Amino acid sequence: MKKILNITILILLLSSCQKLEENLQGSLVNDVFFRTESDLDAAVTAIYSRLVSDPWNGFGSTRVWVPLMGADDLTTLSGGNKQDFKEFDLFAGTSQNGAMRNSGWRIPYSVIYAANNVIGNYQKVSASDPENINKLVAQARFLRAFSYFWIVRIFGEIPLITTVEMDYNVDKSPVKDVYDLIIADLTYAKQHLPPSWQGAPGRPTVWSAKSLLAQVYLTMGGWPLKDEAKYALAASEAKDVIDHSPHDILPNFADIWPLSNENNKEIVWAIQFCSVEKCNSPYYMTHGGYTTMPSEESGWDDVFFELGFYKRFPEGIRKNGTFHTQFTNGVSFEQGSTKHPYIAKYRDGTEKGKPSYENDFMTSRNMNYLRFAEVLLIYAEAQAMADGAPNAEAYKAINRVRFRAGLNDLVPGLGKMPFRDSVVAERGWELAAEFSRWFDLVRTEKVETVKTLKDPLDMKIDVDITKKQYQSPIPDYDVLLNPKLAK
Image (tube, rainbow, N blue to C red):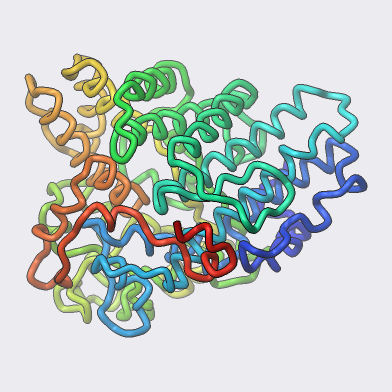
């Protein structure tokens, strides 16, 4: 199987997807298309394409961070052309925010519709290999679960759409109902996905499904559902991955990120990107590309680290591998235009026949979504929350992450909540700029603390933070189309 995103014709098929209200069925959903297993495989490949085929708003763009900017790790410039980022950074996000609508709402729903096309039509296929059909459907259900998990954490109550047919008047569903579907999809996925794929990077495995399910259960244990029974389930799924999967933590933190070492054993699931030679686009690149680079390197300064976060970050090799502090023109970030450090994790990578990344910025560097280090931290937190205190295995899990970072073992004998807070803090350091910090602050009800963590050079928050700001407003354009979404 060729790399998922190399099927150019499917990317072209999907590039016209512009709005949620459009009919996304297209030529993929009809009795003519769904005849053979090859047809079904092509339709599944098209789902992956929707994650990244929009270079400005897909999961390769920096705009996916917009609804997450309220966390204490990332910030932006105060300039007018950074308005989309700045609104959420200052807890003033509105329903008119274009980046929030496109990256937070439209793109995930387009993935959901493409997945529904497969899930609702696979029985039309004349199957010579039922097991292979199940694997294809499992991928569709994994990607649908991933997308719903993304949307429900951002918006809360949302339309729950599981059919191929479009319904522009659907009501919002309770958050629990959305999670019930996510669990059902991932349960099916872990039952039918293989432990590995031959020559097909980016396709989820049983270990990907179990890890994502552990992440889902951990989230359900916190705000808003506070279903504490889910902590034991999160611990169980994560422990199975730790004990039985081929994944492991890499000895050197810096080895996780190079283009030459992508899809390494620490990566449980990554969104794959198209190579420059095939796409010939400066936006199919290391995550964020120009948008996460300093103006001193011809970047756009859209997203960089908060200075307060940088100063609190524990010293050591992990800090060196997380922050880009010395620019290619010899200027340090303290003397730079923003006086803030930038993201180092996504810098590495050059393409064959291309200049160095610092000069060209174009690379097919993947976006790592699930790492084994996170699975270790999920287990540590979930076990302590489920059993009322951390056991030896929970300490071992977090200390494996801390050891690689060059830190001492966590102090022994902590109670449930101090240990949980230590794990959440460790997640902040380990997973900085990896789409987790905002969600962690929300589920642990710590968003209000962000206001007190600012450095004098960080933008100041002038509003009182309440739980109303834990979720983004549904885009106004979609509310206009369906007034039920305003309820």
